[in-house]
Image (cartoon, rainbow, N blue to C red):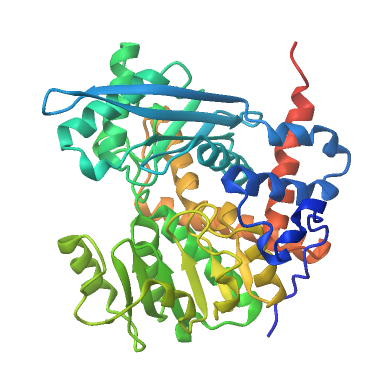
Length: 441
C-alpha cells in the first residue's frame, strides 16, 4: 500500500552555476545551516500572511562563541571552542542539547538550534530553540579534564542560560553526569540551587523518570502510528538501525519487544547483520562491555557501506547529520525511514526517497520525545512535585500521537511530505507568536 503523501511542490530551482553537477547532487553540500534554510524556503508558500515574518526563521536570535581553556592533567593548558546558539524564543525560553564532538561547527549548532525551534513548536511545548556544543573529542579527556571543561564552558555561557532563559540538555557525547556538573556550576555562580537550568539530570538532582528512554520511545511511538497509516505490520517488520546510543538502542529494544526483527545495526565501530533478528538484550550487554556493536558473536559483520543495502521495512538513522544523501538514498529498501538523529537526510535525498514512495518521518517530529520529557522535567523542577514513570510515559505517548496526527492531516490536506507538513505546523506556531508579540522597541 502506498502512502497518501504526494510529492513536495516548490522544489528549489537550479541556479545557472549548478548545471555542472547532476541535479540529484545539487542539494547535498549545503552544510547543516544551508539544509535548514532550504527546508524553510520550501514551507514559506504555505504560511499565508505569516510569510511576512519568515525572515525571522532564517536568523538566529543570538549566537555565542566562547573560548574554553582548561588545565590538563599533565599541567599544560588546552583551549577548546564552544558555542551556544538561541535560534528563536518567541514561544518561550530556548531549549536544546549540548554536544561534545570533534566535528562541531557553528553552522551545525545554528541548524540544530533551528530544528529545535521547529520541533518544540510541532509538539506544542512552550519553548524556543537553542543548541550548544564544544569542538572536542571527549574520549581523549580524563574524567577530571572532562569535568573542568564542562564547568568552564557552563561559566562562559552562563550569561545567556537560565531556567527561564535557555535550558541545555544532553546530546551527542553528553549525559546525566555532564548535566549534573552544568547544574552545579550554574547554581554556584548564582548562589542558589537551580535545578531547572538543565534537563536530563540524574533523578537524585531533580531529573525525571523516563527521560533516558524518551527520545527512543518517541521514535517508536510515531513509527507505530505511521505504520498503521501505510498498512505495515510492526510485528512482522524488519528494522535496520544506524547508531546504537541512547536513541537507537532504545528504539531497537522497543521495536523488538513489539515483535519486529532488528536485522542490522551500525555504530562507530562497525556494522552487524542477522537475518533472523538480533538478540537486542545480548547486544546491549556486548556494547556495554566492549563499547561497540563490532565483534558481536551472534551476527555477521558487514562493510559499513553495505548497511544501506540491507533489506528492511523500517530504517532508523539515529547517529549524526547528513547520513542519507543522494549517493545512497536510491539504495535504501525500507518502506519507512524514522529519523532518530537530527538532520540525517539531505534535501536531495529527501526528494529521491519521496520519488521512490519511501515515507520519511522527519526528525522534527520523530525524535521530539526527548524534549517533551525534558519539558516534563522542567515543570516538575519548578513545582518540586514529581510524577511516576508510568504517568510520564503515558503523557509522552499522548503528546507524540497528537502531534503526529496533526502533521499527518496537514500532509494529507496540502499534499506535501511529512517534513514539509511538520515545518508548516511548527513555523506557523512560531510566527504567530512573533506576530502577536510584535517588535520591541
